Each structure stands twice: as C-alpha cells, then as structure tokens.
Length: 356
Image 1 (cartoon, helix red, strand yellow):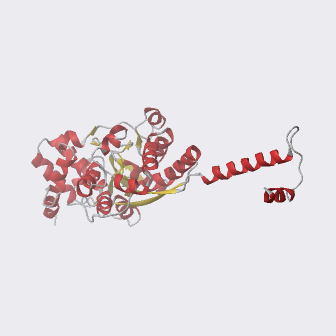
Image 2 (cartoon, rainbow, N blue to C red; image 1 turned 180 degrees about the horizontal axis):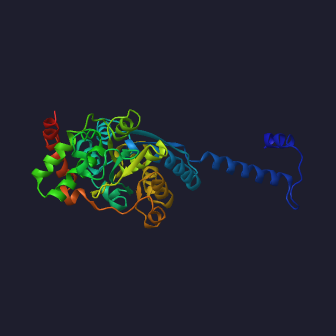
C-alpha cells in the first residue's frame, strides 16, 4: 500500500468526480486501464490462408481476397492474409496430393478435388455437400477467341476441323480447362453426329490442327495472344472475355459456338491442413463468401457466370443464354469421363497419337 501511495503521489493532480475520493477514482481508472489492456491482448492473432487455384482465376482472387480480408476484419477483428498459387488444375491437384500445404482449393473440375480425396485423404469425402450448388459458386463455358475480322470464318466446332485452321488449346493431362475444352468438342460431336465412333473421328481431326499443347489455360492464351500462334483459341468464357478486353479494340473477337458445355469449377477446404493450422473456421468463411453478393459480383466482374439470379440479371448482357450440356448428361460424370478419355491409354492418348 505504501508503494501505491507513493506512486499515486507522482501522478498528475486531477480532480476526481464529485463525491468520489481521489484514491477511489484512481483505483477505478487503473481498473479501466487494465480492462483495456486485457481487451487489447485478446485481439485474435493474424492468420494466413493458402488458396491453390487454377490458371484463369488470378484476377478474380486478387480482388476477392482483398474484399474478404476487409469483411473478416470488420466482422471478427482478425487480420487474414490470403496467398495464391495458380497453375493447371490437374497439376495443382497433384501438388496438394504431394504435400503442398493448401488450406483451400478452388480448382477447375470436381475430378481434381476427388483425386485429392482419394489419393491423400487431405479433403474429406463429403466436401461437395458443404456449400451450395455442389460447392461450385460460379460457372463458365467453353468458347472461341479469333483474330480481328475472323479471317478463317470460325463460327462453330466444325470449323476447327477444317484443314489449315490452327487451333490453340492446352493439354488435358495437366489442365482442367483443357479437359473442359476437349469434352465440349466431344460432346458437341456426340450431339450432332450421334455415335461415339464419329465423335472420336471429329475430335481427332480437331486435334490434328493443334500445333502445341501448353500446360495450362493461361499459357495457351499467351501462345495465342502474345506469340501469335494459331487462328482460334479454345478457352474458358472468362479467359476469352478477359483476353478480348485486354487486347483492346480491333484485335480479338469472341465467338460462342452453337452448343457448349456447362463448366462448374468447385471449391473445398483442405481439412487436414486447415485443422492442423487452426484455420478451419476462416477457411470455410472464405469459401462461403464466394456466394455472398460481393463474391458473386466479383465473379461476374471477372467474367465467371454468377449463381445468384439477382447478380446474373445485372450482367445479362455479358452472359447471353447458351445451349449447354453437362458432363453427367453426355459422359456419365467426371469419374467415367476420366476413365474413358484421360487416363493413361484412354481416348485422348489414342487420338493424339493418331495426329502425329
């Protein structure tokens, strides 16, 4: 008590409220300071997340990550920093299987996430039921990009099989976008021609016009736009719209074929990593925020088709309705599509060898 008395004598003299002794007032003030110190000390520690994503989401997540960090800080008082890894979806999935410490994955197709489930167990088997729309917060489709004036007259998939037409598309063995491209072409041929044999011949002719197989969708865009390879780029609608916008007026044009595929890129928490790092709650909130009005608006701004009807209505001019089919409808689902077409020795290997 003597120490307290000596210490309080050294404090600046200040009037206590009426009816309150200076000693009592100082004790209350010290208690308040202690409470403030405890509150300051209880602020949540900053966290980091690693989002392992596919090639063509770079621009989307650059802006989305900043928006989520602001939202999370306002809601919980916690700083969150999201780091990104981008590449071909199949390549990214293999990296996670081989130990890349992703907290969340936002990949190009469900099969790649299923591969992580099956081969590493890092994602739990019920992942697809955790978020709406089978954990696919936005969609896309497959379209064409051509050079100004469309000198080769590219209008539909059949035109990509004509002799002398250079087609740019990435490698289905490493790129999820490339698998969507391949299945879009194959599905179109099944729908138009009617038999599997005719569809194989159709896609064989198309890939005979492919001079190079880049590892990812962004690499294919670079080959077409920057290196000047080919006459037509097969691409995600999002990548095509971005390429046309960034090239500027009078350089590139987008062509939507008569029929294409419904592409549904999925998302998942990497349970084992997020749980070990203690970030499961924020990782789940991060993916859930993709379904918010802000997340849906940013998806549309970066040329992915939003799931929200209200947001889709605001962007209806950018995303005209298309005649689309699904992987399940034509191929029996991703597992069967992979077994038939993309496994070692599958249809793609056979037809691509025939082109050489």
